[in-house]
Length: 543
Image (cartoon, rainbow, N blue to C red; front, side, top):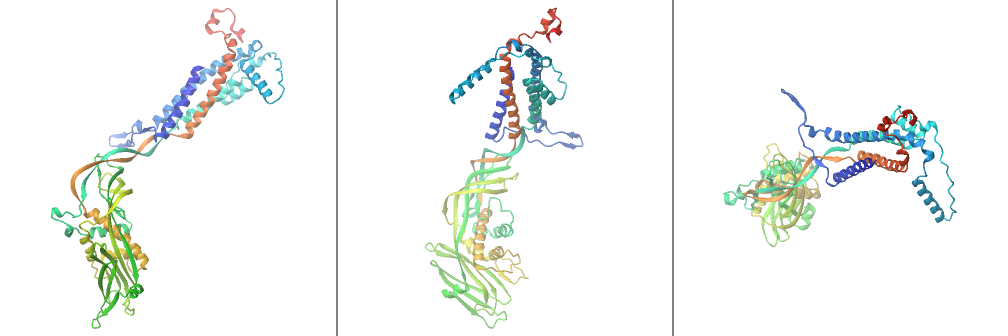
């Protein structure tokens, strides 16, 4: 009986401990991720048994089944002593548990002010022949339990019902463990073989004059305007100095500290009425031109920076989106300006344009330290930025800035069928703001202003990623990698169901232990099999 209690407590403790470890460590153990079963010219190749659920489903079920056999053996022994306990009932003394309960009951009565009632003297009742006969439990297990309880063998009947519960626990135990893919984080080393070169390879005979903006503009068109996936190590707003894992298996999510480069603009947008009110716009018409050409001149100051621009209009060109820049504003006036001039040709208007808009912006370039989380595939050069956190940012003016901004308006795609006058940057702003691939619609100034900021940020980020990172001697840092792994978990519902069954079995076993201990004098009268052989008394007299 002590062995029964020990095994039951051990089962409860082990299952609870495994569940706690599973919750704390995000799984009990890592399960090998082996290939599935396959078939080829050599025949069938089964999957490794260690990657199959048969291991963690069969072993627990076998353990519970083994204990169920131990419980059944105890029930068989209890069946044998049950008739003796019934026969010896008249000679049994009052049970100590009954005496203790009577004492506590009298004490409770006195606490609540009730008069203790003397316990009536009990005369041991004789057992009936029906109760003393060892019943033939040949029915179904559940019926056996109820049959035993009905005949007065209560503990024996409950034990039989619990045997059925243990069979159920054996089936439930096969579902205690399950496998799931979860992210597991570990420390790893990463290296970088590039650095941010603000001279764009000047010392290698290259420099800003050799670094085209066309790849960056095409990337912005694909990602920001058309919704494609961002370029590696780049978002719509930031470019990150790339790092690569030193290990061969590069797949996973990596978190590490790196450098970030990004830009923004401080802008204002003016309509035709605003420009007329400020007296900064003028129209010059060339009457002898077959194209009815004219020139819109703009001269104004933007926070101390003098801007003077002109744009030629033709009656054969219906849409205009021309970017412009000034790169000699000086330190006091924040160095540079960039902007956009838009409108739709209409000869009847005062300035031959409807929906005329002028955007003027101060570009601001930044670099900062950042904690970056990226997803790497088998090809580590292809990285998708998942998340990042910036800190310690500073504004700066890299050496390529002047040439890069000054040449933006020069990039354009020639289209012999087009009636649009738009450079590449202007096309991106119009396309993003109108969401119209044909560029037929020029929206209001507020939408243009918002799209201008978005396109410029993406343009700078992609330009840095494509042109500004140059080779350097490797430098190594430490980061973290998170990969999906198969982990073995304890499933709460079946685990707690099995624990509940064993807790019930433990309580019944404890009661049964007390019952047998109080009737140990009667149990000692049960003859042993070897004693029967030595005795001349017929064995039938024991029943």
